Length: 134
Image 1 (tube, rainbow, N blue to C red):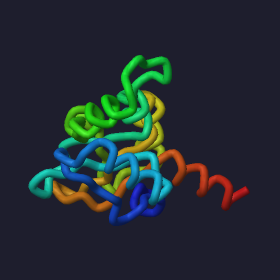
Image 2 (tube, rainbow, N blue to C red):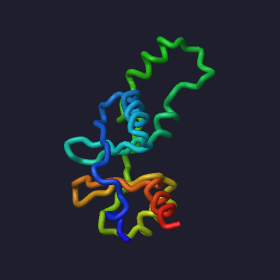
Image 3 (cartoon, one colour):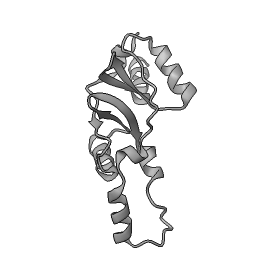
Image 4 (cartoon, rainbow, N blue to C red):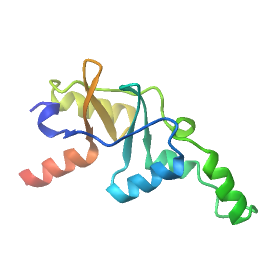
């Protein structure tokens, strides 16, 4: 099987200047854990639910709710995303994508055909495939 057989086509993307809290809301609404960051039709990063969680204040903070919201409103996706993104082509074997994910301890890979984003393949795609074949 190839990456194209398992990937999710037309992934949800965000602009690097999107407020971090908006990206978080989008993830929650869409029930996803990865957003591909695109600028001028190029993949420039990926932001995960973990990236966002790591940038939220500790529950033990001494800041007021107003101060927290003020600071969080200033954070953009660019400031929390991973910019050095591993990507995979749609015609690559699934095993190669899985190996990249395991070796680099990542949960998802943008799928690109040349410079064009065509999908995303995630751990969830592999789990769904395994559950369907069980």
